[in-house]
Length: 509
Image 1 (cartoon, rainbow, N blue to C red):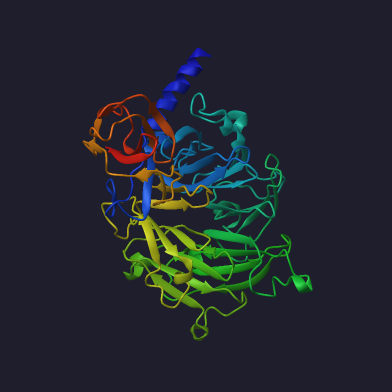
Image 2 (image 1 turned 90 degrees about the vertical axis):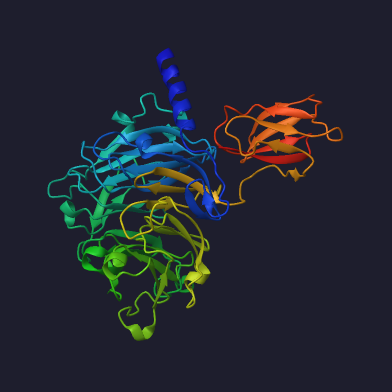
């Protein structure tokens, strides 16, 4: 017991403090990172998240919000494991532990999604890995004693096990439609050539393969929605047409996008298959919230054709339309400000969040993006790879923008987990700013002295993190000068509340 308690203290101290503390985006920079309107909350390096096996790098990322208490967790996939981080306090995230790869083999592509308080994990090009299933409520116990979740804590699913049935080994990706409780495993080349495999996960502890589809070819990534979009062939409540499950597959190996009606897993209905100009590798896409438009990234067109980051916008008002016919004008392009390669992108409301490899996170305004004049669609960014924006496979691999708190998590190949958020959105006390008191030095690397004068006596001091957490209080000072006890504080921005009315900002480097 004492050993585990000591280890907990060691782990908590090490992993909650080693990450970079909050740094606001000021004059286009947050510490060493170029930025626009997005602040750095903290970072945890890949060396902490992953094991030492192979060449540790980051890949996919997803998030979980505990319905019991609203705590937020980042789930970071790496080449050799999947890491879990409590980011409820984004300035002081806590690394809780990891699940190691199922069969000892490492993969450049490990993917994770969440359903019903469970994480579902697949990996590509690693042999007989299967799908790992982990009960996320275990994270309520805090830091794992040996930082490894294993044994009965992790279920490994490789298929139903019947003779002649699909065996799930390596898969490139996993997609979950939460409305129907079905996981779609895609890119499982050894199982069925890479077409979607349908797994009923309504009971996460007892998954069941309920079918697959091979006629559309290999899917690299996909999105599946319970359709409520504008096409009345697939959603028309007045005439009883509801509940259609629509699958959009980004089939890079065949340079196509595939639209399927997958409502009946035993009778898949092809809706359309199409290509687009200057196709190189149809990688991944996401519907706008109204399901009118589909935003697609081609992963290698920047390298193949020399253009800046290109995002394609398809008008899906009619899912059966002939997208190969340029006269219908159903495809629009957006070109970003850099040559970087685009990777995973997700829509949340009127914003499209794109992991842009060497250009980091880019945030695009959806109404502008879908318009014919979209050159100014970018409204913010946080560049996790500051040394270059060239078209190479480094930097931001994926992003998860769905936490209700506004925290945004980024998985960077070389640098691990970044936690960022839009500037000016932190929940801090409503302080009154005045210039009657002065801090020096500011910024500081150790202590800082607060000075008033005979007309402005320092009576009390409170120190808050930029999230509004009180970390220090002192009353009855009654002096013109006071040395703030901040020499042991983590780097970041702090708010110094004086006499319960006046506030100064202190930056600790």
